[in-house]
Image (cartoon, rainbow, N blue to C red; front, side):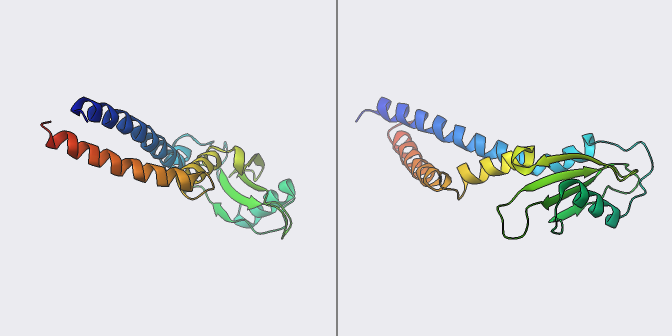
Length: 165
């Protein structure tokens, strides 16, 4: 086979694999940087933080109808006036998940926003990253093909280099 064919196949496989790795990296970056973006650009309360964890959980339960405890609660950093952030499943125990992110004003205890997990930036990027790039029904075959492409790409690179690159 000609060197030109090896170079062409190597180039296109590299571009294909590179696009896959770029999407994987970008979706991972979205998940990793969600917290710093929230700290930098999140809503600020007009008043001094004065609500307690118990008040936040009570307000979230009243607004969402949740009966379970939150999966996690993130208090605003001291002196920042940022919202409390709560992740909770509002479905009754044993039923299909209805996970939501809830923002609670640190000064008033008022629930500002309830966002379904699947519609949040974090949820969308996690679902995309996990299902397509890791272990979802779609992800496993894609990871297997990407691994095989990487091996073929490496072998073609060696052949191209060996033949007088």
